[in-house]
Figure 1 (cartoon, rainbow, N blue to C red):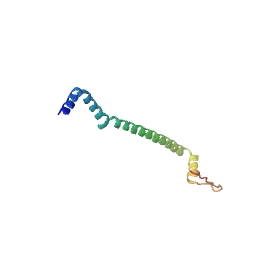
Figure 2: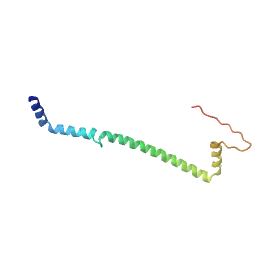
Figure 3: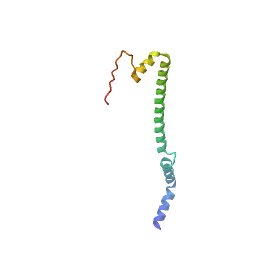
Figure 4: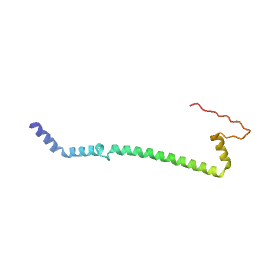
Amino acid sequence: MGKLLSIWNFIRRHKYLITTLTFAIIIGFLDENSIMHRVAYAREISHLQEEIQKYRNEYNESTKRLNELTTNPEAIEQIAREKYLMKKPDEDIYVFEEDK
């Protein structure tokens, strides 16, 4: 009984400290909006923003390439030669592959 009474007296003397620590633990680690979750969400947001920027750059490059193809017939010939290995009748094509 003496041990229980001493624990009760400790709790009565330090009730504000115990309440504050309990609140900090709940908010910091256990809550769904905890600090740990917020850090993870911030990392995910930055990763997604980098991905968005990558796709925007890719879109801009593709748009430039499309505009070039619609206005420049030499660009169509270049793509036919590079991608599809087309050639004129009097030409020879040599394909070099890089070792990875």
